[in-house]
Length: 152
Image (cartoon, rainbow, N blue to C red; front, side, top):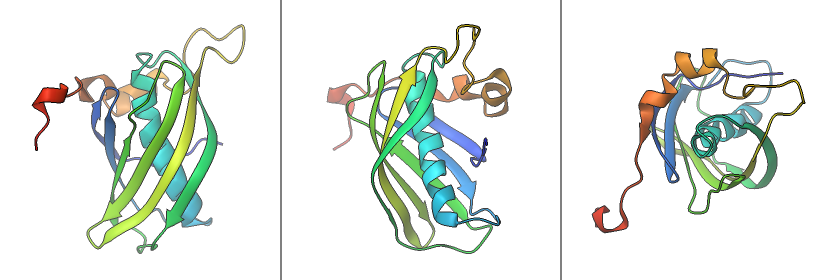
């Protein structure tokens, strides 16, 4: 099953942070599961940038997750994912979802980047062209902030 829950990708700062937005979906299943998936999808954009979106991703582990509230369906959400230790093979991500009323969810997730999942596969399944074009992903990539340039 493939869920595309993000509505807009705002920015991807390579190696540091990805920001996206969505709305609380109206779905016949648990909002908590969908919130975790939104954070993983946003984190996936950050991990994918490490390989120029050539590798596929495996959502490997949820270290911890807290859902603080479930806003009503249609509420705008901001999703942020960041990491201080991403590598070519993925890594641990912290992620949050917020709305106008405050924190909705927080999680620590492990995403792993892998080469093709089958011998016949020549392109990424995770980052297929329709996905990349729909969100204009490549246009949202920003260079990392130089350590001396960070605001205080």
